[in-house]
Image 1 (cartoon, rainbow, N blue to C red):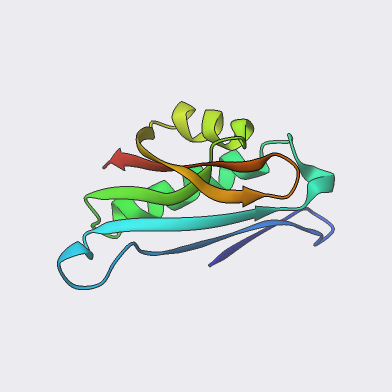
Image 2 (image 1 turned 90 degrees about the vertical axis):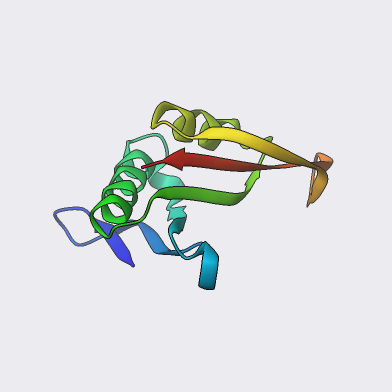
Length: 112
């Protein structure tokens, strides 16, 4: 896990990196991110994602995969695509969004 902080020590966001699956799938990494809404749009998510991709590459993983990216979270989808991830599948109505109803969940993948 990595925590992004500013010069004053304020937590801006976090990234938790891990293998996507155990056993025969353990060559693929994954990560989850949280960014403080007060710091959204300031590059914190991009920095955390880039850090986790570098971590996965230097740790010997062959790919990185996100298993549940909500399709209506277009900022995250665009960010991940700009770093080289591709949507490789979508689970229709896989997420019960509190205001938009049932929406799809993307699986996103990046070869390393």
